[in-house]
Image (cartoon, rainbow, N blue to C red; front, side, top):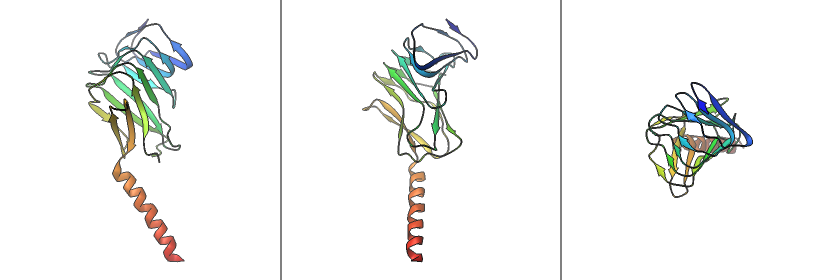
Length: 174
């Protein structure tokens, strides 16, 4: 099955796609479900976009995003612990790839960390480009075989200082 241009293979919720595709430039693998063939997505700038809003996409076997593959993740800052997630049941190669994270409704999350990628095999390389909203960073946890989205420490410190200031001000008025 050829996927050309802006073609999208969408795995619907609870759906498993088992037929391998021939990936060409600009194609997108997205949705919430399972795509079992795995494959090389980086050589032609293929996008993997879990969920249709917030959702989980499981890809069987190895996923190779090296060179120019793109992972598109959305995070919902209005609710804690809500973000797209890619689950890879095999090896994951991120060498030279791009991570794009966008906030839904431009609300900054109040979470401590959210898992955006998990894998069962070996991780090779890291994202060469990270397009993150202001106040976020990512953390690779190779022991836990996961990649987390985190608020930057400075953002958490400012939130803590703001809460402390409000508490002090309230106590002073009494």
